[in-house]
Length: 451
Image (cartoon, helix red, strand yellow):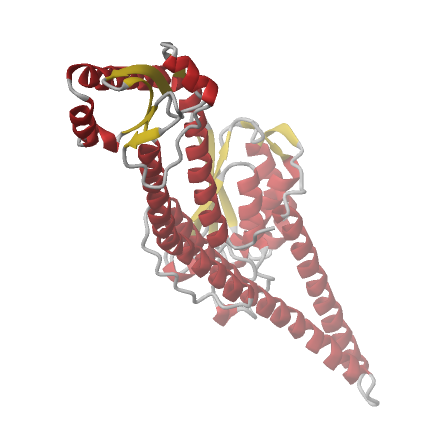
């Protein structure tokens, strides 16, 4: 098994050229063999007749001298046999072999017969004809020296093959070089190095492959950065409650603490344990949503009624802070997963309550067109900076770190919201200015998202 691409390219070229030449030769021989042989035979007959007329018109010595000086002898071989078997030949063979003439053939020609002997394939033909001279009858055999042309053709094809092979050897280097660069870059990426520059400027398929590879490399670099941030965030979020639980558990073992302190320590431990449990549940839910194994249970539901029920269900959260709601919910029916959408409105409205001031107002409205329905949830809270709006839907991201203790949360609620909305073939965006509240706009299709 040949593993080198360079060797494969070269061998493929050579096999193609040699195979094509052989096939073309056999095809030409099969299609044009009879016609070529007929043309060769006609030329030989004409030349033999010309030589015979020379011997008829001139004395023997003058005829021999004239024939020996003919330019056609570069292309034809002439052999003359007398009745005693003596041979007289004309023509430059240049190492080429001529057809064998048998005594029976000589006798036939001396008897006045004309012989036309054709061989199979593209091989010269042999013409035997009687020749009348001053000294008596002779048997003349004329044969074309076409082998020289075949040899020339073979040399030409061989030179073309050698030149083409040298060119493909050079061209294959330029073909394989960018692939070697890609292979080396793949090894570096596998080792964790994403700062690789290919510098491949070719066009066509290799250029497209290089550009796609660079895009993949940038995506992998971004994913690796997100992975590191995720691990860091998880470690930080888990370490904080664990530290609190461990510290207050050790404090409970101390002698002399009062009953009120014991109760406070236990409340803190329980609170931190609940926070860890909630974070674990959120991580599991987000993982299921992102794994594409979570199937939507689509049913028809009244979106306006669902939002109202969510607001009523979390009344303890907003009534204790004197937060009011202004609703502009028009009746609308959509096809969606009831439980998943319930999670969307719970998370968004919960965030609006959390970041609103005492006595604030939350506006909830719907707007419908032919294909989509848009839900807008706006609060009058602290708002979100433009820089944080770009990352607000990332897991573990908390828009206001300075208030991380005041506004408790795992930072995964909006990541879950975005994933659920995406599964419904919808999208979500945020509009906000620091100090002037935030508005989350969710757009969902009216039809079944599976369709």
